[in-house]
Image 1 (cartoon, helix red, strand yellow):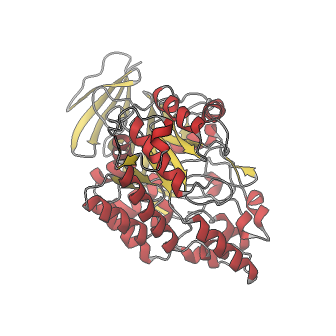
Image 2: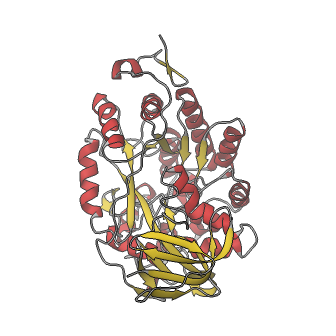
Image 3: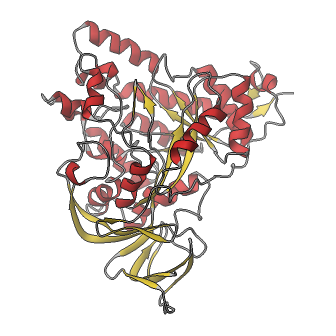
Length: 484
């Protein structure tokens, strides 16, 4: 049955206009000032509302085995929560154990993700370096449609990779037309600071923030940018949380380097004072990496979104119950890192961004969907309200209010780090693959409705047909070119 969204203002990242949107099957068939419906067409009245591309959250961890437990929201409930907040696609992470085959990890994640109620994609993590990893990266790009590889510069002794491994992997990304992502924190320094704090008797959640100051993130961001530049690879810095990291990205972009930055809605709105709470559960619920920062850093992040030096707002959604957080009751290093946000990212950003004048409606669309669709090479299939694009849309009422409450959320945890925030501006309907997935509080999407979205490779940097031996030789690669 065709679906007509009538009477709204269509907002894309580069323009807005009054238009109707006709959907036929899973695709937008037409966007025009007035479309007359055929018999049998379902009609959604969008009068007084905006019609925008469904949100894309490029940073989630659903059903993630991590720090001795598994994140509480699986692909079914994580994506259902996303749809209720106007997000129609998530990009999760396949994270192999060090030494595990990337191909095996991909199959594990695909099995878990079959429950997804909305579309999804993956980033692949590089957690070690070997000829097997070198070879499998090509299969990941060409067969599985994954054009991004995540690298942890933190979590020493677990997921962290060293500079030599970063260099080799970045060079391989450049060769394959893929983009490296980094979690930028100096893991060696963090580990030593954790030990020093514990030796002084600091065991609570505040120790987590003390051990990961902005300087360790800024240093790692600068280092990753330099390594990417030496290999000719672009770079995407996830969860950019502080001025030091943002300024490193802004400098690189001003110098012509292709570097992208991703602040989280948590870092834009919440601050380090949360860790001073005398309620251990409250503070532990907010333990994530990087941690919340002093408020002074928020001005820098907002300025980055306004000026374009930061491009995307994500959530790093990785939810753990209170019981799971209490694994670290006597040692902050053992508190599972992660918070929620999928359900609330877009209403919160509209309230704190558009309603305050920090962002225009078009900029809101850019940082919630269009920019990441372009960065990930799936635009205009995703991230656009245009004929031929996927029919993933949100009908947005700028006057609708919502007070965030854990008791009413779809996420499977019993708290919300944004509890009692009042948002003005929220979805009234979310359309996923041409069907109404959520409307006026009614969830219609079902387990398994989502589909895996493959992403084509970018244009590779010229590195000839380098072999494993050539690409990893000490003098082999200089700024993306194999030496004769």
